[in-house]
Length: 66
Image (tube, rainbow, N blue to C red):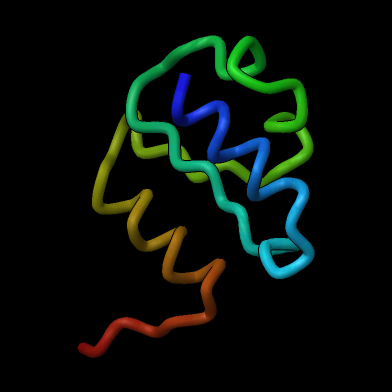
C-alpha cells in the first residue's frame, strides 16, 4: 500500500519527471501495481543482478572504474 502511495506521489511531482526507474528484482505482474509502469524503462535484475546494476548505471550515465 505504501509503495503505491509513494509512486502516485512521485508521479504527480515535476521534480521526479524522467527520474523514476523501476527495478524488477523478481518476476511479477507489475502492471497490476500501477498501470504507468509499462511506460517506464524497467531495469530487470531477475536473471543477473550484476548485469541489472550495470544497466542502471548506464541509464544514470555513470561509468564503472576498471
